[in-house]
Length: 265
Image (cartoon, rainbow, N blue to C red):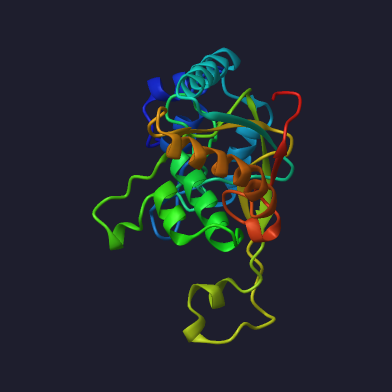
């Protein structure tokens, strides 16, 4: 059967050193036509497709090392602070992204590995400062992270938040969620959850435990004393926030927790 993927792309993206993020998000090669409704679907092939990227480390070690070194030098030049944090549970960034397997993953466009965007790091730390640090004021929070966009024309804070990148090729794992009342969850107004509904196993990709990422923050103006103090506050929050509230999706189930990696620091 003809697949919605041209041959040249399939050959290149299936190579060992290919960008798996591009392959995973744009070039699925196991589509089938649904027998009844005539649309492209993976049906029960989802787990098999994901298994092809979870059997080995993802990413090029040399490219990752170069990217991390550039990031380290930039942050040091800007008088910022680096943190090396290791996943102590599974980690799922960008689960809500559109994807052939229904549950997405945030992939770095050029490195082809899962990562945590700087905007997400900023959001996590703002949430921690707002909800857990009773000593910080709302004025300080707005100064550090920028005022809430709806309440101000400016959203620039005194601290720059960098993307959190893996320092080495990443090990991925498959997990499965199993909603026991799929029809009820689709539309609770149609009825109550009942025992005769069939469970619906849904596989999804995760970053495995034990993967090290480098986090970085820097003052917006390296010569500004106030910005330097803001960075100091943020670096005190960062390991606590990643340990206690975590990052990415499913944090309420224990996903996305990090601890300091003493071997890298």
